Length: 165
Image 1: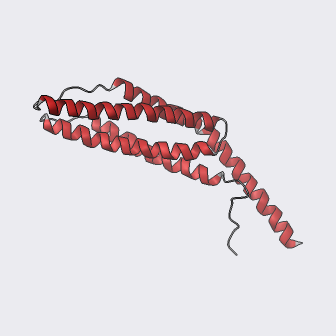
Image 2: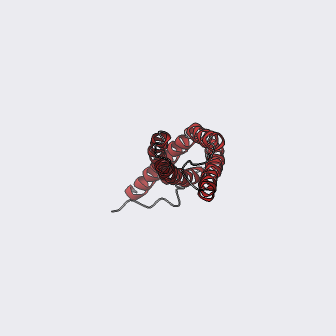
Image 3: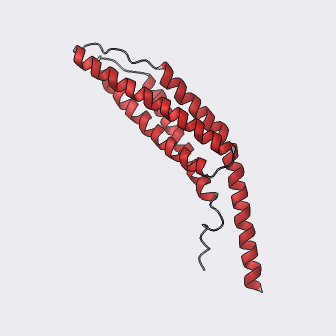
């Protein structure tokens, strides 16, 4: 009898965790929309410009690298918006997608910081926008961790491991 009562309490606790996680998932939709908007804004407003003090071939290569990064930002923005739509519907998969997209965003911000620093050094200066990219990367680390925690917390009851004895 006692085992059955403990089992019912355990099921109720799992349901509460899942319900709380679903509420957290739904509330994360706005943050994902903001992430998508920022990514799309940056991807569409940053413009690749020619580098000074380089050959035309090198300038063309650096412009192509910048354009590729900007297109990646646009794709990340769209994926953020898809994750936001799924999160608004309370879908657990949205948090897995958000975790992956945040990870790609972090990598993209770090790569862009490196590329822009190298470009600026070639031109003999410093690109102050690198600071913004690194701040966005740091914020995305927190977002990725939160999304992963919500994904794990929203496990269906069948997938939840029983507590250790």
